[in-house]
Length: 146
Image 1 (tube, rainbow, N blue to C red):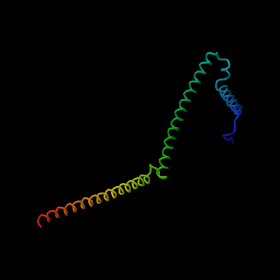
Image 2 (cartoon, one colour):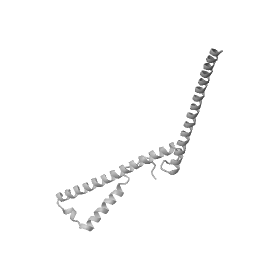
Image 3 (cartoon, helix red, strand yellow):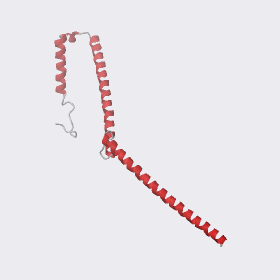
Image 4 (cartoon, rainbow, N blue to C red):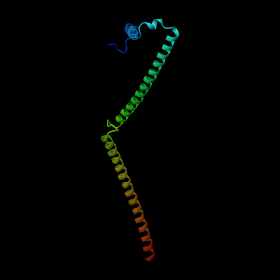
């Protein structure tokens, strides 16, 4: 097993590569005979061009598949970040949606309670001002009648 931090000899796999090339040559010999070695160079150039186009097409297919995998990986990583921010609840599960909704209801209930207590306090202050104003008016009226 090769470790990631160990240098690798790039020519280490050359014998296996050469063996695979030999297998392809043998397969061609069986299918077409030894005619490839006697074909005109122009025909061989055309064969090479066709093979290079195939390599390019397969490279593009692989390029697209890798791109799609990278996009999917980004989506999964961002979902994990969202999961972590929700305390381990997946945002794509019923439990997570219920957890989120429950938290939101609690937040709204707290806000409502705070607003109600502020309203009651404001009404009490307004009532006290009214009482003070009424007492002042009453005292004024009593002062006139006395």
